Length: 418
Image 1 (spheres, rainbow, N blue to C red):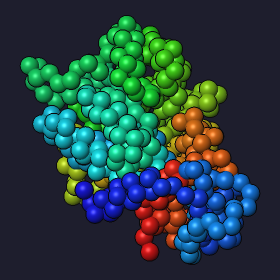
Image 2 (image 1 turned 135 degrees about the horizontal axis):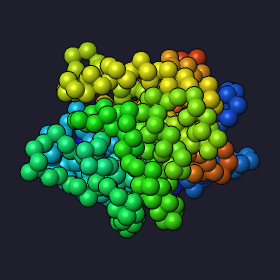
Image 3 (image 1 turned 120 degrees about the horizontal axis):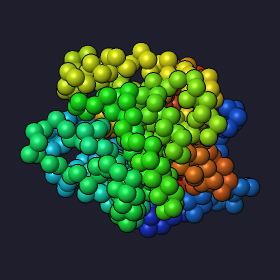
C-alpha cells in the first residue's frame, strides 16, 4: 500500500476514535450551485456534518491557507477492482482475492485524489465490490463511499462475455442473460448479494472481442424485464451503451443512466431529456486506449474500434450538451490508472463544457444521479462533510482538480499536503 494510503488509514482510525468539532478555513470557498467564490472560505463541521450559524468559541481551526474549498468529488463510473491494462487473459488468470486487494489499493488512490463517493459499475463474479464497500463503510480501510453493481449483465457473445476463448473455456457465466426470465432471476440474485444498482451492457464495447459497439445487445422484452424487476427491488439500472439504437432501447426501458453514449443522435438525446435519463460520458477512457505506445496493451481489434468511435463520440457529446441532458462525471477507471481519476475534467472542458459545468457534473449532477442530492455534492449546512481543497481557482484552471491538497470525508481528515 502506498505510504500516503497507510498514513490515511492510521489517521482515519485515530480520528474515528475521537471526533471533535472544527473549522476549516481557506482563502476561498466555491459555491458550486452559483459558481461564486466566497472570500475567505469557512466551514464549521461537527459530527461529520456541515453546520449552520456561528461556531462556538474555542473550536479547533484548520487553516488551509491560499486554497479553495470544494465539495468532495463523485465518480459515477468506476471499476476499483480492475487493474488497468489487465485484458481478458489477465482477468482470467487473476484470483478473486487478488482483485479485492487491488480494490483496497485503488480505493485509497481515488480517495486521495479527492473523490469521496463513487458508483462502481461492474466488478468480478465474486461480488468483491460489495465486500470492499462494506469494509470502507465500517471504517476498516480508507476509501470513498461506494455504491456497487456487482457483475454487469450481458448477453452471450456480448460485451462482458469473455468471448475471446475457445468453446471449451467457460468463465463466470452467471451474469449472461438471454431471456426476460433470466434477467429477472439475475436481478433477484444480485439484490440478494447486496448490490445498490444493476449494470447491463446494452451494446457491444471497445475492449471486447467479436461484438459491435453500435448494435443493441438485449431484446426490448429483456431490457424491460431487467428494469422492471430492478424497480421492484428498489434498484436503479445503468446501461453501458455506445450505439444510438442501444441507447434508445435502454432509455425507453427506463434505465437511470447511459454510460458512454458515444454515438448519440439528436432524436435519442431528445428522448433521454424527456425521460430525465442521465449521461455518464467517460471521455478519457477512450482517449487513453489510443495513447502513444499503447501503454495499456490494448489488442489491435479494440484499437480499431476506438479509432472509429473517437471522432463520432465528440459529436455525440456535443449533441447531449446541446439537448440539456444531465451529464454526470464518470471515468471508467480500470481502463486507465485509478490515480488519474480527475483526468476527465480536462476532456469535459475541451469537448465543450464550461469549467463550472464540468465541476457540477462531479458534484451536484452526480449526487442527483445517485439520489443523494440532500447528502453530498455541495457545501451546505446539513450535508455530509465531504470537503476537498485545491490550489488556485478551478474555474480558471480546471487542471487544478488533478492536484488535490486536502481531503475530508465524513468530517474526518484523510489527506493534508502542506
